[in-house]
Image (cartoon, rainbow, N blue to C red; front, side, top):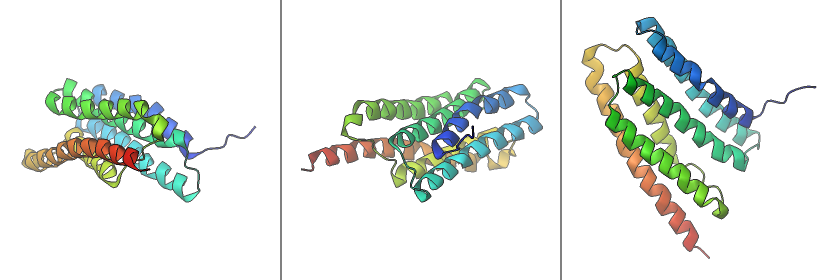
Length: 179
C-alpha cells in the first residue's frame, strides 16, 4: 500500500514537528543549539511556502488545507514566542498581542465557516512572513548591535498583525453585504 503525500499531509507533518523546535530551544542555551532551533523553525516555515505553492500548482487546494495551513502557522509562531518568552528572550506583551489576534481570528473563522472559508490575504501572508523572521531573530545568537534592527522588524510584525486582523473582519463583512 503506497502512501500518497499531499499538500495537506505536509501541513500535518509541519504541525507534528513543532515540538522538535521547542525541544531544541530548551535543550541548551549554547549558540549551537539556538542555531539548531532556528534551523528547525526555518525549515518548518519554508514548508508553509512549499505546501501552499504545491496545492495551487497541482490544483489540490481544499477547504481543509485552507483552514489547516493558518492553524499550522499559528502553532509554529506561538510555540516559538512562548518558548522564547519562558526563556526570557522575548517580550510577553508581544506574545499576548499576537496570540490574542491569532486565536481570535481562528475562532472567528470557525464561527463564520458557514459563509465559506476565508482565504489568507496577501497582507496576512506578509504578516506571517514578518512574524516568522522577527521571532527567528530572537532565536539566533545575534550580536547586540543588531538588536535594534531585530526589535524594529518585530514592531512591524506587531503592527501588521493588528492591521490584518481588523482587515480580515472588514473583508468578511464586505463579502456578506454582496447579493
